[in-house]
Amino acid sequence: MTTLAHLLFLTQRQLRALLRQPWYIAFTIVQPVIWLVLYGQLFQRVVELPGFHAESYITFLTPGVIIMTALFSGGWNGMGTIVEIDRGVMDRFLVTPVSRVALMGGRLVALAAISVVQSLMLIGLGLLLGARLGGGVAGVLTLLASGVLLAAPFGALSNALALVVRKQESVIGASNFLLLPLTFLSPVYMAKELMPGWIRTVTRFNPVTWSVDAAREALKPQADWAAVMLRIGCLVLFAIGAAALATRAFRAYQRSL
Image 1 (cartoon, rainbow, N blue to C red):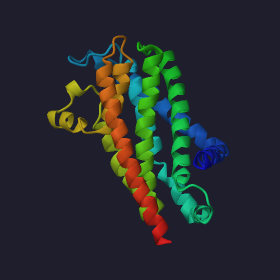
Image 2 (image 1 turned 180 degrees about the vertical axis):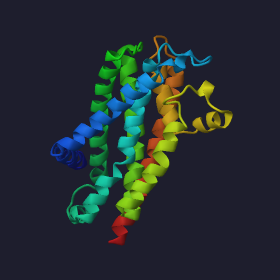
Image 3 (image 1 turned 60 degrees about the vertical axis):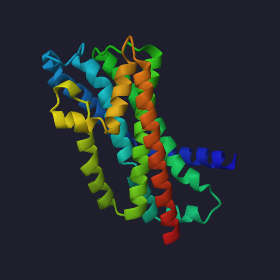
């Protein structure tokens, strides 16, 4: 119960800090909206290409942008850890009896909550723009879960990197180096059938692809739930591996003090 209470408190702390930054909240909301509207209009005729197999591009794009937003939210989560290290907040926490699991877990639970809120807003916008999500409530819940299961492990890895390098510039450089290639080496914007062969091969091992595929399949009127659960299972294993790496990084940080 103590760990759970600490986790709840630290999650609330992260969310309260976020609410004190209205401009940051505005930008995190507006940016994916721009992606959805801009790319939805720019590439709307791409569905006419042979082999695309989508009813409309906005229907195809909406889950992709939601997953991409979750990816970037997770990938940049370590920046908050850098700030807490630089200000001495992390070290002050470490001399208290607060649960070490809750220290990292609070950031990730807050990240998951933010990801769900962003996703719901984007779903609403996608519907207004004409997206058809035929999977019903189960499909939408799977979409939300797919986003969270992508944001959380990337958030854990981002925090692990922050604990190891302890420099904002290094975390920024690593995030930029990884997040955009992972996005474009996945079917966020383009159907896999139209990708070059080597990219199709790479996408099979990309967690972003697992998340996007699970979400899109679940949103079909007649979903293949076995395929969905297989990809969800891959995301869970990825999350476990990321959590293990983050735990090791946190212990290394404690030993270095």
